[in-house]
Image 1 (cartoon, rainbow, N blue to C red):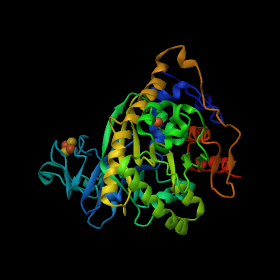
Image 2 (image 1 turned 90 degrees about the vertical axis):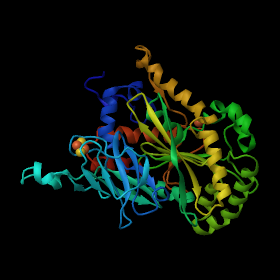
Image 3 (image 1 turned 120 degrees about the vertical axis):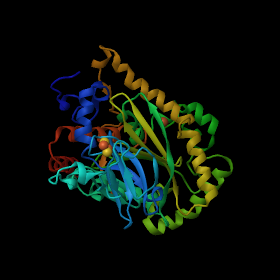
Image 4 (image 1 turned 120 degrees about the horizontal axis):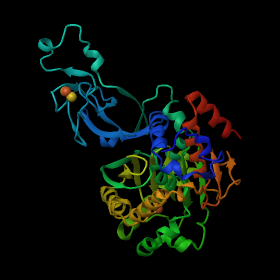
Length: 444
Ligand code: FES
Ligand SMILES: [Fe+2]
């Protein structure tokens, strides 16, 4: 255990060097639950996962269990999935449709808005002074962006749209397509003995590992990714981005003839036809820059623990389970207007590559566990980690792209940006402080 933690000593101010304890220490983790997870906007659901009135799903915000429901009025609400009586988990199902949620222990019932709707024998066994309304479940502040639903416990957090900032502009590349995007669920879930940040960082900006870690898988899959096999070359035209509140991504664009993705066979052809047809529509709707990014392979993360891949079409949440374990939840990301055959083909690719036994997921999991477990060593734990690749090459708000941008794609600018956001959240007492500090950093 580390007593009297000074987070500023654990991550260098520019994010380029880190103490291994931030990926290992129990006290750091408890502080993360309070300062990062209880204050950030966290991914909860997508409209397509709870389309009907009464639909619900259960998920986590950090380690807080929550129920997300679509009420009779069509509004989405979220509240704690923990009984106000003696604390039991109220709903153990992953998803379903319900008017009420009834606790298994003594039968207290809650409506789809999280308010207490019945306490068995209340009049006989509770005094008249009993304040039933105080038993309603703690609500989550919920907002959504293009059908993607997020929640925060912090009323002082900026709006979701401000929190996304420039990332919303980039998300529109695949979320603001005609018809929108959707997630195919239910998510697959797998536990990995690794710190959640290693995964989020791997997705926010680690292009560098792809050609090396995944060399064997790329050889099997073939296609446009063969160019980066064995780290023989940095991906052509690839760029890295980091936004104000720590979100970021890599994108390697294709051309009119080249479509970077990892689909195979018939589905690869269908995907390419789809992108070929949609690109001019996107160009018209969103402009040249995002049309270029539309035909690109991306890996990205939204701070703190949501990640995605485009061209592989996966959407993930790294659910923390202590400093040294994570539960990986994976959905498939598709456009709503795609033909059903293409959607199911994409789901199949996603399961084959980044699902529970996915050939690329396994490669990553082994590295993330290794990164975490070396800190078991008393001497090793004192050795710093490095993320200085491309340091000093970042540009702010180029004429073409909002946010911080850096080239080439093999870069650690987005990881440093993510870690600086983490450091700011861990050391700031209020959102006012966080916003002021991040605005200063991202001012041109
Ligand atoms: S703990 Fe839920 S009804 Fe008693
Ligand atoms: Fe990977």
